[in-house]
Amino acid sequence: MHNQLFTASPEKKALNPGKTGEWFMFAIESKETRALIGDCAFNINETDPRQAELGVTLAKTSQKKGFAQETIQLLIKYIFKNSAVERVNMITYMENAACIELIKKLGLKKTNIELGYAGSQSDKELYGIKKSESMFSILKVAWQAKPNKKTDGNA
Image (tube, rainbow, N blue to C red):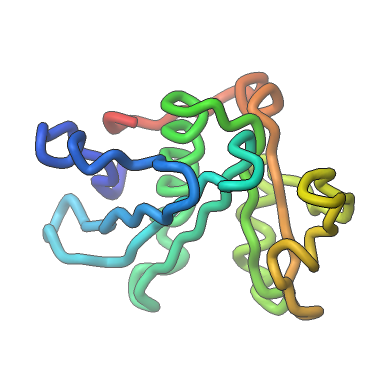
């Protein structure tokens, strides 16, 4: 695989990634050059800890090389394995066709339904999504049922 996302050092384990209501960010580095090529982060929803949101940002020079796919796979695997989360959400700009294609390829589906917590707020009310943004989600059971979820790393 291309990048190193999670390491198992005692120092990093003590940082407690996945604390409800707090974003936790990981650096993404190239295994070949050890250069920082981007970051990824996730947040377990404080109102509904069965849901998490994740995001990935890559340097322009590192895009379209498989890094985002590998990172998203590892992060989803990590979230489902290490928390009680049952649904992972990603938000992207509607104009970002490459990202939308990738997250659909990974099995996330466009979400246009009420999430049903804290007064039955809609996605737009809850996340403040602009009209130019879309949310995509995958349930834990759907992720676990996917064939060929090959990832290496220590997620």
